[in-house]
Length: 620
Image (cartoon, rainbow, N blue to C red):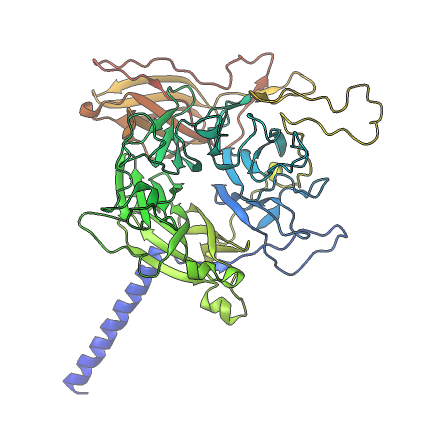
């Protein structure tokens, strides 16, 4: 063979090797994960028959995960086969969690509901109201204006109000919890006789109205870094004191319970607007967060304010106080990747990074995209997804079903609508028609099955809404000497009540015997006793900014410690210890237990310096 022939073979071999390594790099970047339709079958019919045909679940308002194999979605339903309500994911598949109810209204279903996890076995939903909420004969609004609290495998509480009253609940669009005793729900504007947005707070015992001060609706809410961030619609004529009309706050912060004041407006300049672009030219920020960062995506409004330049898709990112704007107006100016095709963001999900990808700015987020042309196709629209890096690079854009699925006969399933990513390379997408697509490596599509009994049975009962009169039956109830239809007090704080108060069990605290000290002058050592195995993360804040934090660590039960190195020039004012137990907490009799069994109070923690920590923050 000639020298030229040998050289050609060598070049071909080199190209082959380069191609192999490039393919491996591409696979490693996405973890070998691919999108695929994974639609659950309809529930069993009353006749006992099981359908073998996949059908859409109806409009899915929200999809949220506590763990990769513990997830929930809430749907408006697709009657008669799919009633409104909730579905649960156990790592192997989705199954119906709530039934259709006595009036076929669906147990805690919603037109456009929300889900907020308060703990591993406790969560809340924003759900539709039920008939009988009117104080007049006028048809009352029912969409997304009641709350369901789930605990112990049942609807532990239901909350609503009579319609057409000053105390009436408004439609709610945001929900979030910092723990079982600190949950918030917010939405539309209060009636004209009041100022601000409708907002409720659950303190573990009662649900009370806590109106937000700003004069625009609240449209999203997300927990991050021990606080709740809520996204508001901007109105330059209804601002918080001290806000500038040219730089209003799109985000407000709710600090953990006990921190006053509870609402903090973010500093101006987030997001950055283009020259001539009014703040009202952008819609609200759709929020998502993982342990690394908080993301927000805003679409331009369909009709910009008079005198304003048209808005553009804008995406912001907060890495514990370090704000950036991966997409949108910037200096120097750069091309917006969504402008050319007129795409907008329906939803976004922060994708947690792999263990080896935890460097600052290495994480990414998945986007559910659409456009006017795409949305106009209705049920015949494909679902469009794309991956966005922290630097603003858009990649892995694709339409679903995939070409391989189309070849097998799958047709369009509707535009991309909701998205959630509970783990690296593990995401779920819901379309406008109620179809589910799953991103995962083939070897990880089936996870260890979650067999928690709280999620394994069908929930068929929802108690009466606190604050709504009971409906008087047509016939007298059997052996009932009470007063049917007696109207409870309307308005104020509604509390959950139990019919019989008996001696019971209460969970002991996850952490006890907490002590702190400084080691080598600038390293904080936190010692404690851990009741059960748990995930822990210690965060140090100086006012609103995070100045230091430990990685999330999994620790076994027993005497343990965390160490956090501090910067003397940025000395913290507060510590927050985030904790997630990985096993049931031990219990004690309510008679024997201390009244403060479920709270951990460490008092003031003074360090040997002229500065002190204000306190150890509440456990999240």
